[in-house]
Amino acid sequence: MRIVFLSPSGELGGAETALLDMLGAIREARPQWALAMIAASDGPLIAKAGSYADVASLPFPNALARLGEWGARRSVASRLRLGARLITASVPAMTYAKRLQRHLLDFHPDITHSNGLKMHLLGARVRPPQSKLVWHLHDYPAARRLTAQLLATQAHRCDAMLANSESVAAEARQRFGPSVPVQTVYNSVDLERFSPTGPCADLDALATLPPLGADGIRVGLVGTFARWKGHGVFLDAMARLRDLSNVRGYIVGGSIYRTDASQYSREELRAQAEALRLDDAVGFTGKVDDVPSVLRALDIVVHASTEPEPFGLVIAEAMACGRPVIVSRAGGAA
Image 1 (cartoon, rainbow, N blue to C red):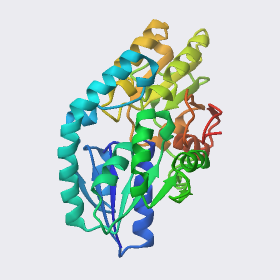
Image 2: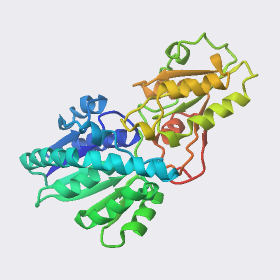
Image 3: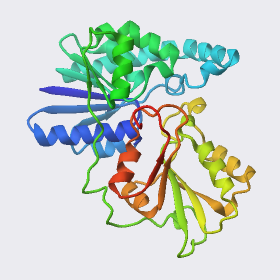
């Protein structure tokens, strides 16, 4: 069996972490299978996946990498800007598709597994004739109307879909109909890494803040800087606790895609914190590779998504570390 995995990012967000876990599990269960992965940017996913598969970085052209639909439904002007970006990206996307197709033909995959919306569309167009196509859904297609319409036009090229929660699976079945089987495969958590005992990160040092006292309560939001992950909600909540000197908030993570409209920059979030006069009440650690040590260092983990969360891997990881978690009650998280 020969399987090639297509990832729209070489960074490590929830979808990419789930992909890495899948690669490791398949390699352990079927060591004789030939596995390969193509990522559309460099990053830690490339380095870690190399333990399980042949890996290649095939970066998206800039116009395609920066193309994102989030927020385009909010105004006529934003929809017009999206249309202009689509036109700009069309020729680079076709050129990229030809390069990706050559890589796939060289590998001769029995299965082509795509792990993100852009790769679902590209995979549908370029997968080799003998290869089965599997879309692994980590998002709600309906959240991006144009993308959902494009996926619907290509669903007949897909042989099976995986969904990371029953919530996502239910929407996929409703949107794409009964012709393509949809199977729920929950994201996994390594309970040897994510456990209540083990090293704890020095969050104050990572955030370059003075040490919090022994009676301090550390509250953290861990995740990518996607705009719907609720960073603004978290900062507003921390502002209400501003007078409690023993409570400190931490924002852990960073940007993993190049679609500026769909994610915050660190500077934007810092500006929001300064506007709320949070100063030393909230720290920014940046990306931290050892996520279990971060979760163990927190007293409360917050997952404040403002849109339905397809799964919310960090929720399960925090629970495995024995931390209390406050979660938006919607989507797969509910």
